[in-house]
Image (cartoon, rainbow, N blue to C red; front, side, top):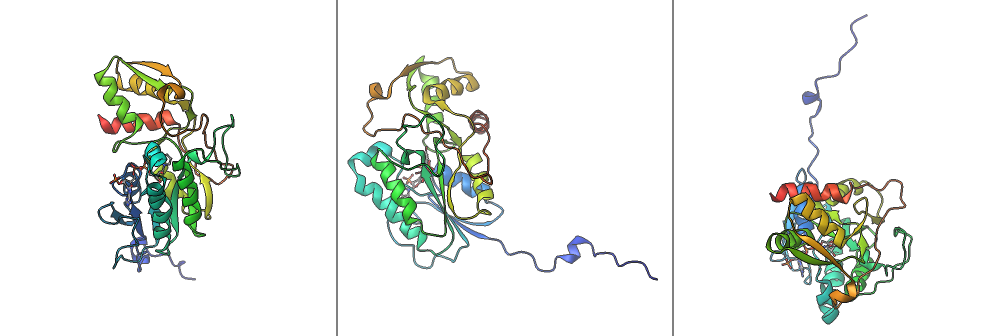
Length: 283
Ligand SMILES: NC(=O)c1ccc[n+]([C@@H]2O[C@H](COP(=O)([O-])OP(=O)(O)OC[C@H]3O[C@@H](n4cnc5c(N)ncnc54)[C@H](OP(=O)(O)O)[C@@H]3O)[C@@H](O)[C@H]2O)c1
């Protein structure tokens, strides 16, 4: 009897390389869009900024066929949406319809602001949405516009090393001032865009539907500001104030901690770990 045949070495066994998945990112200039383009860098990423495709308009002529759409373009000015709800809807609902028209499976990013904030235990996917702001209503309608072949990812309090976000604002104010006033009566799960983007990579192997993906743990904005100053070594004090004192035009949920009730949902690290990773990229 001859020796059993050995399998060929791996490099000879692979004769047909797997073609790269083509992934389109809308809103690629935003903080989440930037993180998604990084997280999917092993794929063939087509990263479109607003100047490449204004999603209020149908997809540009000649856009290549893609396998997956990560739809991160959105109207994110929560207060501005109160005075221009139609403008916000044109992007968040109309823009999502246009992204869905590409016909590829789509990831739509939604928000904790679809909830009214009356609960005091985490919101799960089966909780009823009841947005209190124009922004929240447009994002909820956008969930419907994403179509059947979509993952609806609800997340909260995004921050990252680029763009306008609470962490970057606190770093700037904390280096300019001895004290900042920050609201202490809104509790959420601030989520690092790098952790969310990594979780989205895992998620697209799961079935379509609604998924809550937010950082582990929760805090108020005042607690997050204190953590930013502590981690960054800034000697700035936080003066806790109420949402009413701040007097912003859009109502915000007092409690909007998101958790998934789906056992197979990707789990994100704690917000404090996200904060450390974000700060490490900023210094
Ligand atoms: N930020 C949060 O705390 C948070 C929380 C929960 C959910 N989300 C959701 O997460 C997603 C990403 O948010 P983000 O924090 O990355 O926001 P972001 O930094 O404001 O990015 C949004 C991007 O969309 C672009 N955009 C706006 N209107 C557009 C249009 N008509 N056509 C094409 N691009 C357009 C913006 O471009 P310009 O810069 O030129 O305006 C920006 O690059 C959004 O769906 C948002 O609703 C965000």
